[in-house]
Image (tube, rainbow, N blue to C red):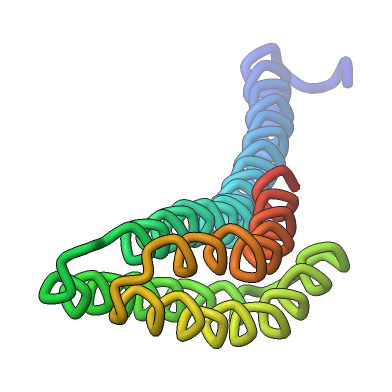
Length: 168
């Protein structure tokens, strides 16, 4: 090294330093891109899935409240409007559940809750006719009893499962 002039030594030293800094910068950029991809995945997959389930949970609660409106309704001309509102909720719930079921990387708890939903949701919807019939007949007491017993029992199972998914 003593045979090289000071200018060459400085140039070589700065060259090594520049290569070293480029290496550190490249590694930092690679790490930042990986972190960005992980955060994007976390948002796209997890947050969107949880948001869908939160929306489904809210819609099922609204749907359930509408059943009580149906049971309490004494004006039979309004019953069809209530049933249309319930169908709208059902359509929105089904859209979101389909999107959720297509989400990647569902946990075992989410898969179990989804399976339970697919089992109990049709049963819940089937029980509505036991509220609708007495409501149409003007028998509010019988309609309310059905809403509070068999319909509510199944709804509680659905609500518990959906609430568990949102907690995950």
